[in-house]
Image (tube, rainbow, N blue to C red):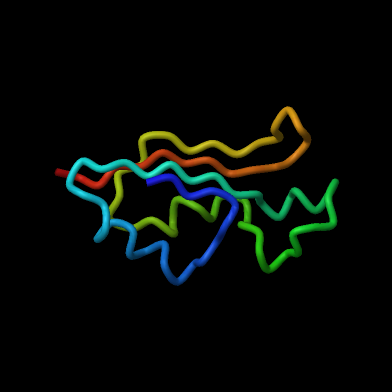
Length: 84
């Protein structure tokens, strides 16, 4: 499952139920730090730094990073797997 540039905190905890055992989630979303350079999206649509892993209970985190992209956005990335 690929999830990019859309955040719905109430649905994220349920991702582990819809992935097949061993299934992968790749999620990319801007963080609040992005507001240092870009006025949009607004703060309520952004992740707090370090927030993303806590929104994915039941998934094994394979990789999590946050940082500035080459095009000047601050994003959080995660690759996670549902255990078999």
